[in-house]
Amino acid sequence: MSAYARDRAVVLGAGMAGLLAARVLAETYAHVLVVDRDQLTGVTGPRRGVPHARHAHALLARGQQILNELFPGLDDELTAAGIPAGDISGNLRWYFNGRRLSPVHTGLVSVSATRPVLEAHVRGRVAALSRVEFRERCVIRGLAASSDRTRVTGVLLQDEDGSGSEEVVEADLVVDATGRGSRTPAWLEELGYARPREDRVKIDLAYTTRHFRLKEDPYGTDLSINPVASPANPRGAFFPKLADGSSQLSLTGILGDHPPTDDEGFLAFAKTLAAPEIYRAIRDAEPLDEPVTFRFPASVRRRYEDLRRFPDGLLVIGDGVCSFNPVYGQGMTVAAMEAMELRDHLHGSARPGGLAFFRGISSILDVPWDLAATADLNFPGVQGPRTLKVRMGNAYMARLQSAAAHDGELTGAFFRVAGLVDSPQSLMRPSVALRVLRGGSQHGVAGRAAA
Ligand SMILES: Cc1cc2nc3c(=O)[nH]c(=O)nc-3n(C[C@H](O)[C@H](O)[C@H](O)COP(=O)(O)OP(=O)(O)OC[C@H]3O[C@@H](n4cnc5c(N)ncnc54)[C@H](O)[C@@H]3O)c2cc1C
Image 1: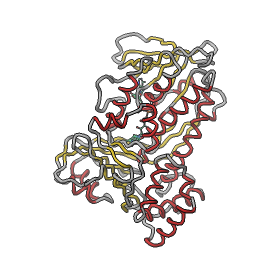
Image 2: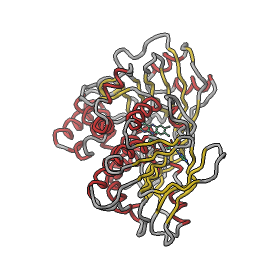
Image 3: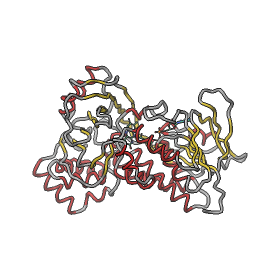
Image 4: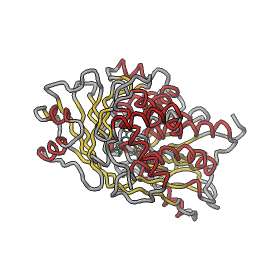
């Protein structure tokens, strides 16, 4: 531990990013206080502060690996709780560009936990750390700063029901993990700093989710059926079976083509999916709730790393820095990768400076941001520069996915990249490129690359 007095860190928000930040902060801070506006104790279902948690969430392979490093035995704990687990490309049925990818076992694990259940298990592990304390049903009203405004010295908190008065809790470090609605840009302005520049990709996406008890099993040995949206068929879905034997169906529609919430409209949308077995499975199934919609107007990346000045004692992590088109399933994994960067930063630096941290996570964000933005730009209605790199990337990916319909090796290589385990360059290795060219020309390329 450095000479810098690391006494108290306060984490704002107990979503996945906040929990993972708390886990690594507890290695170097004597007290870690995690604040959230929701009740957390005993909660294993959706809560008000995380409305997106009602919708299908999958953890990518890299996220799975990091969670098991931070919380040894987590996969076993989930399995013991009855949560189905399997191979990401061997036991999940994937459709890209309208074609089913050839399955292959890569050894990359996927656990079919809903987001609230996964979060509850992670929260349980964090709560068991002696240095961590939770403050529930408590709203963050703002930051406290030194008189010269060069340093954040704490946070202003108030009970969620507004009963008590505002209270200042002092901290050596404040980590904002309040998600997409993070107020750090506004707080920076109030303290006399510039707001970060934002990159945006407008996608006008919506998820509509409903749970069912099925009469017939469409899964076989698979854990989930996932026809992913593509320009050829912009309607997508995630259809996992859950621990209690029910199924969750999240329909996704981009560029304003939002999945309806009425019975008929929901069914009609499901009928247009590239995986016909989903419609067949739900048309006579018992619905367990009403469909719920979540709208996601744009992917947003806040460029904190480009700021020239940033107050000491403050960091931002998770969706507050970058929130991705959710269909690529990157958010929780990126939050986990950022937590690992935070850990390195805390162990290496005498005094955790914001700009150095933001530069560190910026290089983590580049790959998933490029993967998502490139794939989004394949949809003709998404606005943005279609550089040669974007056009070639999409053309190659369409060819690879087409070839992967008959070549499990390519399915595996694709999921190692999409899972943020291998770099995108690994798909250009001669051994992979040859299979893509051979497969693509033998079987034709479905879907279309952006012009
Ligand atoms: C529809 C949808 C589907 C998704 N699917 C996936 C997926 O398949 N895989 C994946 O990895 N990611 C997915 N994501 C993204 C993922 O949910 C997030 O990236 C990830 O959970 C990290 O979020 P976070 O912790 O930064 O923020 P959040 O999950 O938004 O958590 C923020 C927390 O801060 C609290 N909070 C906010 N403001 C205040 C305040 N003023 N006072 C007190 N508390 C406050 C909230 O209560 C909440 O607990 C999806 C997102 C959406 C929208």
